[in-house]
Length: 547
Image (tube, rainbow, N blue to C red; front, side, top):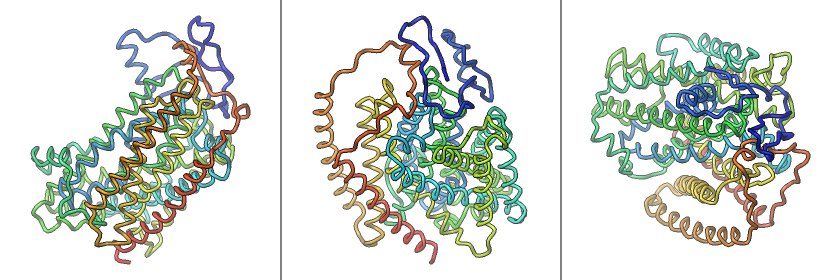
């Protein structure tokens, strides 16, 4: 089960790793090139580095663009159509959140060779893994439903019945995935990534002005003032741009692509590139709807993405409506493919079944069957007459935002587990930044809960109070953390070659981490709070949908 052996460094021994599936070992077979497992040559020229990056690129770009899915297109369209450019400032703030979260996932995947769900199961036990994977499964299933809603709305614009479009899309997704070739699957996905750039000609049709765009990007504000509805939309923007399924998908996809620590910097570049691409795409969709509908009777009256396509047709012409419908269709397909695959990876992790795109259907029946069943059931719900599709679409993006802190806490704990990551554990500054991000996400969900229970509460005052409490709590936590760092024994230095070849030992050889009583209480408190927050979010979504 050996991997890279680097140079002549006596420390750079080839370790026995925790990789559970032999299909996850071997050459990196990317859409644009192959890197042999024996390839340990230094990349000294820009040409060699670009060729290596071309072979590595994929997991980061796909996970990011896949998050600009049907729900994302609908959420960004709603932000632009109802609030103009006033909510654009939320989007650039999400770039560091995306990079910080997914960079930790990059290290976990490359160093451990094990999926995110499997690590949670092995390090925290079946009880907490059931919560984590259970949350993921419910959220992912609802997200996949929204992808098929997007397919129905997009092709409905062209007059295609959902009873035709949805089954064909479902069959195509399964056929694209069950090929037994990781390289072939990745090529399919990168075609849809390229389709994301249709937003560039789309935004040109709306004739945007630079002044309002830059003001919206860099000056925080909310047109009409802050209230429970606008807070719900902001959380939905966060949830659709930074979603829990991304953690599970990218880590498993990195493992499946056979990326090892030697190639981490290339995968980091892949992830950073994807982060900017996805946020720029989100900005362009928001800007399109903001300028297209400003001063028309459509402004402030968002209903769904299908209606937005028809409205763009009426305001900007048939070409704009067609481009928007194609953007929505492309987003729905890449989102459905990525979210469903990420869920199937997690199911394979949890139940210990073979789960690799390098295997054909007969070698990984459970993996591919779970993928097909998720597609079939999600597509089936969209075809049920009278199904509450509006409630699902409104709620699922905000639900992702509410559940993200819980997923991020497990991620942070794993990235500070020295038995798991060895020399690749988080640096103190990264822990501080990640903790701050989690705290801000929790404050946002608290505001949503408070505004749902007390609709007339002053959101600005509440935000200032919670912000002050947050800063005080972070100051105390930072002091305790620094004191703990001082008492921690220094780690012996490690050569670059040894670090690049270090892999997590087999899971059976690792001791289970012990939680302090304070950590157990904090985790239970977080779990209880999230249950309440989810219930109140669903109440708010039903209210907004007219239920």
